Length: 383
Image 1: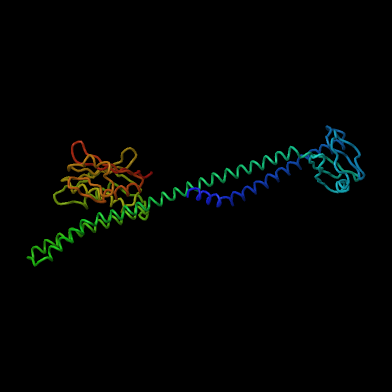
Image 2: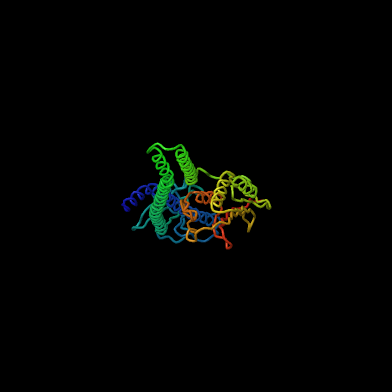
C-alpha cells in the first residue's frame, strides 16, 4: 500500500514538475542562443573596427565579402560558410544560417557593410552544444530530484495529517470515555436511590433523604457535563482566549471572596498590581477550580498574586494533607485521583488547558510545612 501511495503522489507531482522543467529547458535553450548571438556580435564588431580603421586584432573565421564572394579574409580560416544564398541576404540585413561540414555543426552570421558588402563570421557549435546538453542534463536531474523530494515531502505531510487526524479521533474517543466515566457514578446513585424508594411505601422522611441524594448526584452530573463541554471547546480551539488587559491581583481577590466556604478561611493578601493580557472569564474559571479543589481538603486556603522573574504568578496554597506523591506527575490528567478521598474530576485538567492557552504553565507540589500549593505562571503584559 505504501508504494502505491508513493506512485500516486509522484503521478500528481509529475505534471507541475514537468511543466517547470519544460520552462527551464526552453529558458536554457534561449540563454544559449542569446550567448551565441552575443559572441557573433562581438566578433563582427571587432571585424568592423579592423576593416574600418585598420586597427584591431585579426578575427579568425571572418571575412569581408561582396555580392559574388569573399573580398578579404580577416583571420585564420578553416571552414567557409555556404556562400550561395548567404551573401544575397547578408548584404541587405543581418543573417544567420546553420550548416554542417565533415560531421561538425556551424552557424554563419552576416552583417551588412558599406557599398553592398557584408561581414561574415562562422562559429562552431560543438562547445556550445556541449554546454546546452549539460544544461539539459542539469534540468532533467533537477526535475528528478524535485519529483523525488516532492513525493517524499507529500508522503511525510500525508503521514503528519493522518497522525493529526488520529490524535483528534483519539481525543474525541477519550472525551467520550471521560463522559461515560463521569456520568456513571451519579447516574448509578440516582438509579439505586429511586429504585429503593419505589420498592415499597416509605415514610416521608425516607423520600426526603432519597430526593436529597438524587439532587446531590444530579448536581455532580451537571458539573461534570459542564466541565466536559468546556474541555471539548478547549480541545477544539473554540474557546480561544479573548485577550485584554487584566489585573490578575484583583481577579485573585475576587475569586477568593466568591469561594468563601463555611468552616474554611479563604484569603487573598493584597499586593502590588500585576497586569496580564488574558481572557477574564477563562482565567477566572481556572482559578475557581483551583480554589474549590483546595477548599475540599483544607481549613485555610491562600491565593497570593505577585510578579516574579518577569512573570505573573498566582499561588493557591492550603493547609490540607497535600497531594499523594505518586499522583503529582498525573495531577492535571483528566480524572486523575489526587486526594485521600479518591476524588476524581476534570477541574485541574481544565486549569491546565486554560493556562496553556494563555501561554503559561501550571505546577503542583506539596509544601515542606504541610499542605499543597499550585502555582500558575503567565506572561506579564508588556509595558
